[in-house]
Image (tube, rainbow, N blue to C red):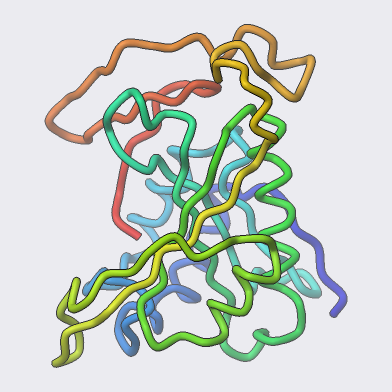
Length: 211
């Protein structure tokens, strides 16, 4: 597969929206129920622009997949944990694109000093499970009948993966990248009604959204 992984820009929004739409409309892979249009996808990408936490897979000049990491929860104690998602266009699956996206994303997150990533997979989804296991995720638990979509209750399994070794240091005292010294200082939790903001240790605040 002649492809590259690069940081997403707002110009990639229409392509990402087109890739994501079938997952929303025709499957239970995501619990979103209305496919976001290009405008909404632009808004989501812009929240991460310049932070290297939203990546795209480009093949022969065309965006065919994307992956990103979002805040896991809004409590400040969770600030070193992110939730990841990856989506690859159907016709480009099973050729290593998803793994390339994930490996690039996880490397960037580790460099920024994040501790752990988690992922939720709605069942059944054997390809997604295989991908997460291939890049080092381990099962961490499961939920039964956690969501209703496409006329049925859906189960989900949780996966997690450490990004840095547990060296006994407080997370605010650790960074894997010399250029990021001082960026892991804990910040006070700030919340606004729209959008809800989640504090990040190594970033400015990033707005939370659905899948």
